[in-house]
Amino acid sequence: MRKAEIWVSLAFMLLGVIVIADSIRLGFMWGRTGPASGFFPFYLAVVMVISSVIVFFNAFTLYKKEGAGKPLMPPGALKSILWVVIPSAAMVMLMEFVGLHIAAALFLGFYMRAVGKIGWTTTLLVGIIAPLSLYITFDKLFLIPLPQGLWGGYILRF
Image (cartoon, rainbow, N blue to C red; front, side):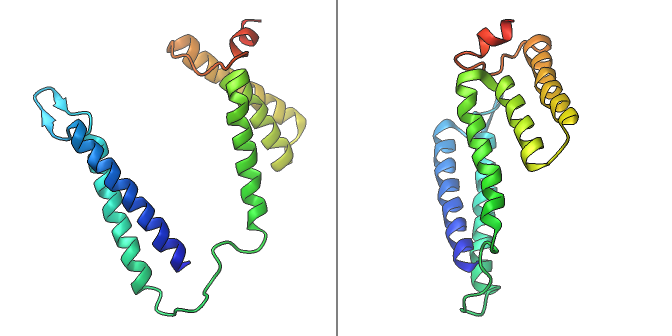
């Protein structure tokens, strides 16, 4: 666990420093018209770097024993992680072809039925109503088009 905390904190420190440098390039001060474009990313990155430094030093002070310690993932945890990662990645890839609405309907339907073991009626209702409400809310009411993919625009016309 100690090695993981050290490496992750170093990675977040590096990411924070990169964001800080780019925010300085964009301008991070408050101007006459309001905050510059790098204002919020700059201060968020500062908080991220400070938090990473705290985690980094806690990794050395809280873990006195140099032994093996607890494993990062308990046995069998990888299966649960893959049940989240693989369908999510498939949804993102499918979204490129059929758009967000249809990909979300398929993702919700699969996840509710396969992972949650929820009945067909509830699965179909949620799988249809949730993306439909997204479509009506964003595309029709707010006029904010969500990704339609290669074929999603044609499918939603029917």
